Image 1 (tube, rainbow, N blue to C red):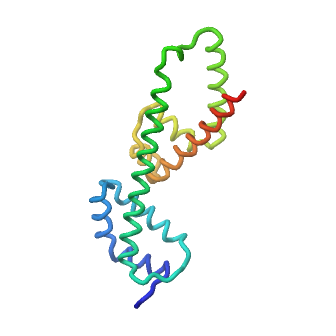
Image 2 (cartoon, helix red, strand yellow):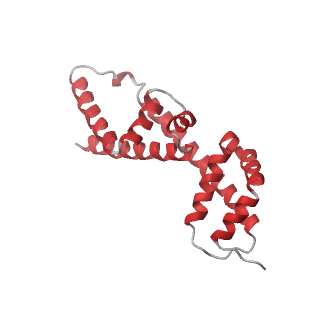
Image 3 (spheres, rainbow, N blue to C red):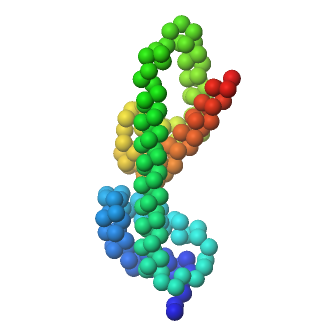
Length: 170
């Protein structure tokens, strides 16, 4: 039984790159299979250098698990966006008088919180949520992976959720 550490996994990944890309594309990654494979590569790079008895099988299992994680994250993100959207459609949310003042004050807090995350996260959030630009297009514009765009959006959403809780308790 042959064992490989993480450097052996990298070599195996390179040897099976085409097969892994087809596998990921068939499992739903589609044109983003390259990004998903790159994410898998990064996970393997930071994994502990431990022996793996069957590296090809290990890589395909890791790819399947990574696709499952992506599907879960996508489902959660879409549900969160629908919930966010549905919250703003109630007639009582129409700003009048004092609500306008409160809304402007909350907007200033939101803008400060987004600015505090850094210009890239702020830019990604605004392009996606305000301009309606797709995540893949944002990744292409900024020369970064789709995963990085998703992580930036997660940071922004997490910060805004925390801010919302803080503002609602005040």
